[in-house]
Image (tube, rainbow, N blue to C red; front, side):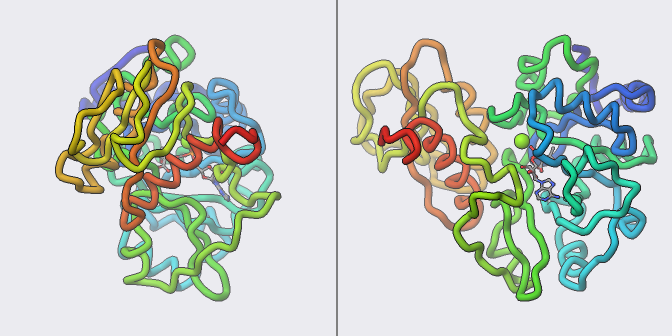
Length: 327
Ligand code: TXA
Ligand code: MG
């Protein structure tokens, strides 16, 4: 895999040439790195599913460089969406709309709706603007694994299977976009992410989801998403960490010594935004061959802390969830 500096115009030109040819290219966004294909090219989009080993029923987000052509791709933009576009685009908010037929079914996994966002990372914007077409892109990781926030995470996951990744430095937010849809009674959050419920609530009425149904509307709500390879257990603090071959992902500076072999502190001072920006990269570092378990300290479920906890609960559910009977 070639790694090129995304701020260089020549790199953008090379990425565009590959994309036009039906190849896939990894690129930085302000949330996490994405793996892109021209959204109008079903064969190219199919490559994304193949390379990620992602099931075909899990739809992709379509990335635009601005909201001006949104009407070409979606049937209807509700007034709440207009307000959210004004407040959060470009930025880490994905909105689900009814799609027009120009968006191929493979992008949306056959759903009548499409998730759309305008990223704010200058390299992503430059790439889409130069391409002059929307970019279908999931996070640039193997299906089910953690999202990449650094260029080397992408390189390590895909090696020769992806021809090019544009380097845009570390992803600023470090956690994926918030995904919302529009209901008669308000705006519903499908995935907690970098835009917080508190921020959304300043502009629209946010309705809470009932318990996720078995037939999930967003397959990203699958319980095993965002997981490290090693089992992860949620704990209240360093006192709950058992001695042995373990890693400990602390939220703030531990107030006592910790028995784990490897320790990373998300934010020494307990700042949730800082914690989110370090979250995936620290968890990837702690997911090592020489340990048997990762202990992760719970974080407060306010602001972006909800997004962190959503991902930690899914990661712990994979090995310690009710379905395994192995709490
Ligand atoms: O921050 C992000 O959103 C990153 C960057 C690259 O933009 N992308 C990302 O994509 O996280 P991905 O594919 O890893 O997660 C997108 C989630 C999936 O879980 C998918 O199920 C959901 O969005 N999604 C996409 N289209 C949808 C739709 N029409 N209805 C419901 N959920 C949808
Ligand atoms: Mg993903």
